[in-house]
Length: 418
Image 1 (spheres, rainbow, N blue to C red):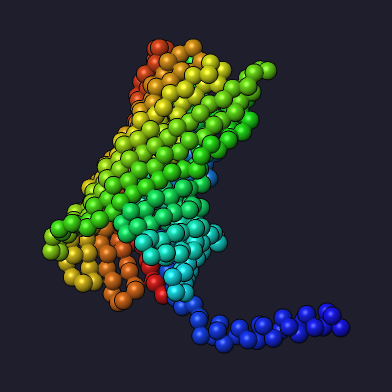
Image 2 (tube, rainbow, N blue to C red):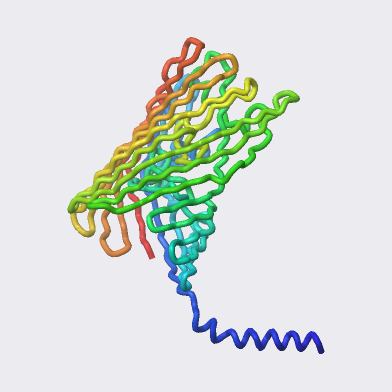
């Protein structure tokens, strides 16, 4: 009888609350975007698969990649051409939710994979955000589509992009401050092969998770990031940065070795409009950009170089810039072109030898955005990523620069929003 009484009271309370729930419903707005990438993609015969190709053994980078893969047979090297006919990985379905001063959003991409899931509380003077969203150090200015169906927007080739990351953030108008999940990309180890050539560097200079005595990575702090975006005159302006720190543990013989990685990136950007013309630009500078999660930067000298045997480390330095020019011909047709540059440089100890590694990349593209009707976009694009060369210097003779060739494409992005 006692249990029945408790159940009856609980039922009465639920029924009494139903009118309140009915009068206080959340507003849900669902959305979706289907995107296809159809292109002809090509790599030169000297382009390392680790830089350009998906599924390549030892591939370090996940953006701007293609199924085209250079290969060797005997003493001959061959480039490769592939047709890309892909559902873009950033196709998505999601919803935004509003319930008084509480809000939220979720978004799933193809795969499926969780892209966004966060809630917000507007407490009057600002907003608290909890969940997975783009980090605070985030400012895209390029509409670059290819290659590989990832719609990279220059991500990995010089754009300001921290990824979609779990975080706790405070937002006050254009000011955003967040504590984010740490990015623990491992450092690189110097190759023990001599002479130190670019070819042996690719084969032997791997991440420490596959290297000598690696045990684990310990997170010391969340990644800290902040940015401020504001409007003035004909343009919008951005300034931001992020800092990340964590520790790697190694066993070298019977000794414990600890390697602390400090990584940071600072950047500024702008979007300017003059009638039908617009100009967008960003500039970045930092240390160990891949260790801080800025990118990920698609070049080799982008992380700290560490030798656990000698317990010596050296930070990489990074610079990047991009300039985007656009012209809106009509309400349904826009032309855009851009140039993106990045440079990485690191010098460290490779066993008994000092080695310096430097690389530049140059990205060029031209596209036309045609919208024949609302929410439908057809975007032809041509582009080239020039990986330039890996420049090596060391105390060992015989280190010629090694050309890394190019990745090029001509394709069309098809997009329907619903």
